Length: 160
Image (cartoon, rainbow, N blue to C red):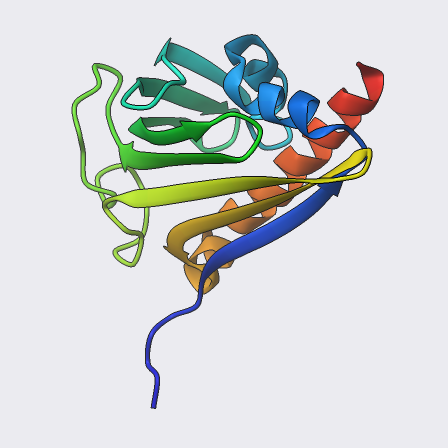
């Protein structure tokens, strides 16, 4: 019997060319417009979207407060693929346990997110794979957050 939990996997189809969709994931100015759940904002203390580059960000949530995260870009392949790590942190950039950051004991201490971009004519299919159980992501709202953020990105790309 397989007792492994299903990992988070989401796909979304954008009515925009792959170059525009990929750019929205790597341009810090564009990220600040869509990379936070509804009602929240994101601030990047640092961001270097290049292989080996790092980021340190905070999602400001009016209900749940601040959520600081840091990570490293393991792979940046233009218009094809992004791979980055995510670790809970404090405002100074020090790693903190997921529990100390307000997550449940089931939330992983370290996550890797892989985003692939596939051109389908004038559209782009984005697939997101994250090393957190889908069950935990749904329970915490992270899954729903991804869906809302992708919706925000869709709206933003239509306006461009």
